[in-house]
Length: 152
Image (cartoon, rainbow, N blue to C red; front, side, top):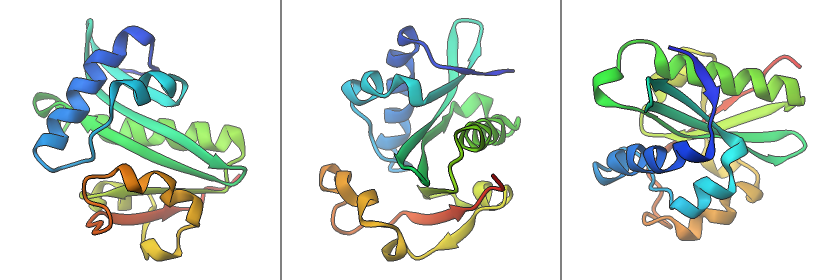
């Protein structure tokens, strides 16, 4: 399976996949509007016409980006697809010259395998928290923060 940039037609399936896991309290929900507005941030893996996985690379500043909304359909897990999506985000961040990446997750082991290290959320720049007020868990965030410093 191949990682590709998402297309507008992928958004409804991405939304369904992300919010399926959000309903299970495994990730944060994303509204359709946010996915459409940020389509250029999104990567997908398709099986035929079906989106089986997605992730986004959201740039915050000249030296900071976040990997968000990494979701792999249950029947497509344990095939390395999540790793492929993270690597695609890392590659694009490198091409852009981004010096620091972070993620907030409930599954840190996957990111740690790729060189991310656990960090104190409070040490992340304030800009990161600009959308936290929309989070259903605000202000009691229970996600784990991880940081990655690629060689650029």
